[in-house]
Image 1 (tube, rainbow, N blue to C red):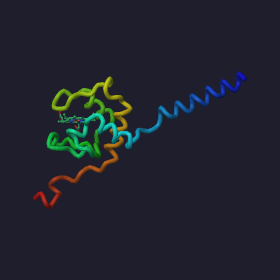
Image 2 (image 1 turned 90 degrees about the vertical axis):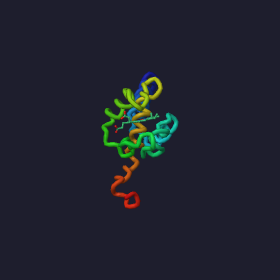
Image 3 (image 1 turned 45 degrees about the vertical axis):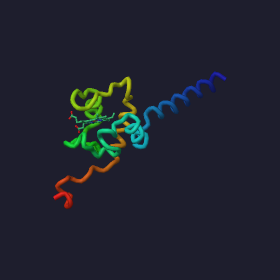
Image 4 (image 1 turned 180 degrees about the vertical axis):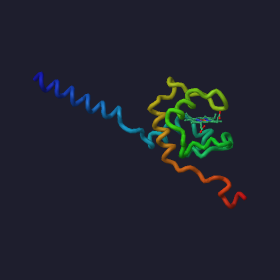
Length: 115
Ligand code: HEC
């Protein structure tokens, strides 16, 4: 009996542990990007908008995750900061995975119609 309880505990620890360590999810990140209102300034695909027209495209971001999170937590300019109490690091990691899954838009200079 004692053995099976211990076995159960080990199995539970493995299952829960692997859940916590699972990779960030782009799909969850897409939802978090919408529910947290990031789309209002950055566009639904992180493509940027009139609000963030100057180089703040987030899709295909080349920022490392730490810098991405650092900016979101500590912004003191045009973007409001999002502290941990209202936006978890897990949600941010998911958003990061989502943004990395969206291809970067082409450079404006490369679009013939805009010339
Ligand atoms: C009110 C409009 C607004 C909202 C809402 C907003 N942002 Fe921003 N964001 C900006 C602006 C404007 C900048 C450029 C700001 C600057 O350079 O100070 C920016 C910059 C950033 C950057 C830095 C990009 C870079 O390459 O330097 C990241 C990362 C970012 N936003 C993520 C997010 C995330 C994630 C959310 C949602 C949790 C969010 N933003 C919500 C307006 C917004």
